[in-house]
Length: 438
Image (cartoon, rainbow, N blue to C red):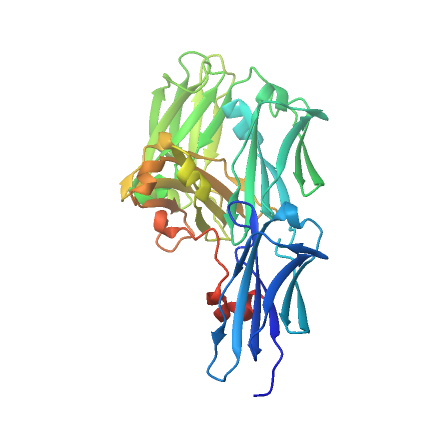
């Protein structure tokens, strides 16, 4: 038979870096005859003698041979060097350079968002969310500055989560309202692959004078609107004088009048509530809260209605699984529910385990934040679970309610079987994946 040369293919693991930080290179010699003498590896011009696997030759139906070899080496050992596979038969030598297995560097997109002035005033603190999205490799460092000086407390950075081969993370800064309303500049710094990105945000002025009675109307919860026949409107009167009277009307129709005594979240506030039909709320009717007291020269009025939404956007919901190394090493794991691209901003997120509601104390939802286009919103929910529950095969569902969802409710369910293997072996099985991985 006429001798035929070896055709060489360089292969990389489709999972790029393995969980132990090593890289897997493959060398595939095909369609040669007669048998080759050896397959060897070199880093630049230096022979490699460790981390090698040489597989037996396979005789193909057309009378030629196929043989493969695998090299496992750490990313630090490779450095900037080139990796070569050499195949010999007698005095014949074929050499193949294996392309970089370390993967492309993808810089993160960094987005800085804040809670509204109304939320800051009512909750007495401001929340700033630094979202670090779609980066590779995984390692990043996040730090915060206050007027250019490093901060060592007041923020929490989440573990990275893998989505479609890239990584994402968030860092949340909490600032007391008194500090926020002083034009202080806060900076989120993200260092990735020796490149640092900075995003600044400036605290605002106090939105209203302190001391005057202020009315704030709260709409019904989105969960009530989507699931119940009646909904609750809430009128919060801050800096309220003792014995203040609160009256409710729908258009000009009286609904309720009372001396408000139910305390609000603050010591100087009271609240009054009224129940109305969900249909009346959805109709867009105007509801008024009228506050009167002998110390007020004239009654104070505020109104609320459900605003018409012209740009309904259905949310995109995904559940991010805990990293594989956490599953085996930690007592508690975290599941993250990422809800993006929805409008309007009203939404609710709950969790269930095996179709039973999870105690709200076991998960934390972020504030709803505007995305870059300021026309859609996103929110995260982080659920803490025991590692043994996850290992038992329990199914966890992120339940999301939003008016743009056709059935109003959508859920995403995961369990331990939802995960993907963290690495693949390069062996003769790679014969079927030459085209996709070379």
